[in-house]
Amino acid sequence: MAAARLGSPPLARGNPWTDRLWAADGGLTPARAGKPVRVHEISDGQAEQAAREYADMHENTVFVEDGQHPRISEGAGTIGVELLAAGEIDTVVLPVGDGALITGVARWIKEHAPDTRIVGVCAKGTASMAESWRAGRVLPTERADTFAEGIAISSPISESVARMRLLVDDMVVVDDADILAAMRTALATLGVLPEPAGAAGLAAIATHDVPGEVLATAVTGANVATSLFGDVLTVTEVSH
Image 1 (cartoon, rainbow, N blue to C red):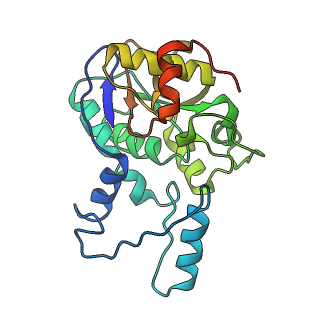
Image 2 (cartoon, helix red, strand yellow):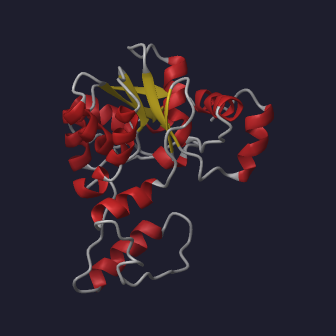
């Protein structure tokens, strides 16, 4: 993950899940802590259900859902630490799926720079979290229609919605075409090809009137489908 102030090189690189695991386990991943790691062959889209069933069948096993438990979200606060270390920021713009990333970063920033605004970004075809944030309650949608799989959420977690209501100042949505354009911009200017979800913040900055002179976002580039490479390099618009 690259946490970047607009107009400057990336400030930090890492893995958001690694950040969360280290924060939750005092600096230890499960393997380093001597915990067993089980790998199962699971069909696409069935991993979460399989994990839930495993937890139900095994005593002293807890299913940990990203976005539900605040201690997991707080690991993302390391992004906020590094952003503020670079100087004052008017607005931080972050992609929103289940809300874990934005609430973790916002928790730190609101504590140490309360005047900094936090803006969340959803893809237009999967805006259930934005709608839930505005309504103050969970508003699920029938489906998540976007190529930005990392923020494709159709049924938000109520605990995450509640935390976002406390920590997030505004929510906006962007089209898939805007995200694709932002991916191209990141590749050309930062030398990073972000995954679609990771480019959502850049897309929002480019297409919305985000307040402030100094803006920041987080750019991730670990999960780009190879099928998108041609689109990023040659196609100017994606439609869904």
